[in-house]
Length: 497
Image 1: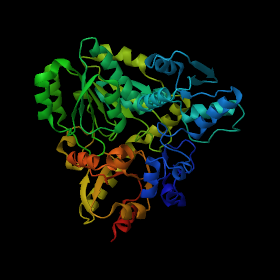
Image 2 (image 1 turned 90 degrees about the vertical axis):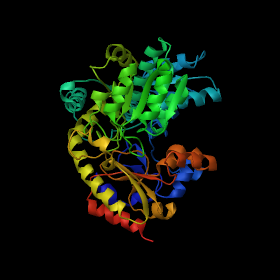
Image 3 (image 1 turned 60 degrees about the vertical axis):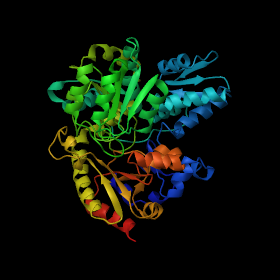
Image 4 (image 1 turned 60 degrees about the horizontal axis):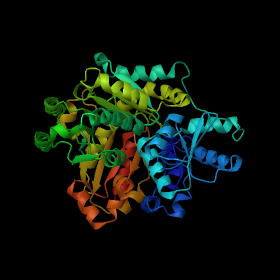
């Protein structure tokens, strides 16, 4: 995997990351112009993409199935390949679709709807935000059975009890807490399932306000914007005083809170012990997305009701599958209500994805320890560079220290603000650049451009970002396990004036 850093594809827009893996979930965007072209959907950029994060860019195997359906089934209206018939039925019910068809063939479920542009857009958005998509391996098996592919991609897997091995590894990080763990087809599907379960419970009690604690990942934001009746936003995750004041006046209307630990991309962490004591007063449930750190690094379960984690990230380490987990605290006041609903709602992952992750997750703890050592070295280096204005990492948070599993361990992501021109630094940096994080190879991302481009290009939007501590030119770095000397050498070259 670490050969990735030395391969010439890192300078080519649209190449897969990882380069030789058909199941890659990231894509190379090596220049600022590529990032802008991607966000503005310019043909010259999109036509070069060989991959992309699957919730945003259809995998090439999914695209081939759509073509197959058009050719063999003569489907000429919008079609969506989803994770299961259950997911298709959910979409039909949610959008009250009268005329539709659900086609099942060799494990692939296709929802076909009338040619209505607004409806098509809404469904695509729902699939993106809730992560109920078919995996590339599921699509690969379909194409193999149809004779369109002659063989499947060769990779190392664990075929013996893969699901149990994943669950056992995750559970081992929580010790005596012995949580109930559910696997989902993607990290966002885990987030949505946890949210929707609690929202149903609370709506029946007349509680409809959801609190967003911290600047969250874009799709976590969209879930609350689109699928809640009301929400209240606290952009600074550490501002528990604001939270207390709001709850004193509005607690009876609050359904729950969603936060990230640490937040993405500024790596902020509240005082979880204090947060729990506040929420216990009002019996308000808390969902924490720990993807930026991972279960091998932190344990916030004693303080929250539901932990969600994208296993696509550090548990996988290779950026070649989609999966998530919902980790339910059995000691939670909400456990008996949320568990059966969440179990029913969640979309289970495909077996071959489980076989791959069961192999990869064996090195989870070893991986994050190596990454943590590199994070510390890079944070120290960046803090001494005149070309860097600010460094955001978990090593500067005392609240993070309180929730780590191992003394001194750090989350594998850090972010930097530049005091030199963005384009000069970004284009010169000879490391991998693209979306996602949690890989064994270092991956640099223009986070605000890729997550909030609509704000970056407007003066008011840039002002709003800065008011909330987000520099539009911020670079998020998912640190890998390469030699720290090599990484520093590459960043030094990019920072040279």
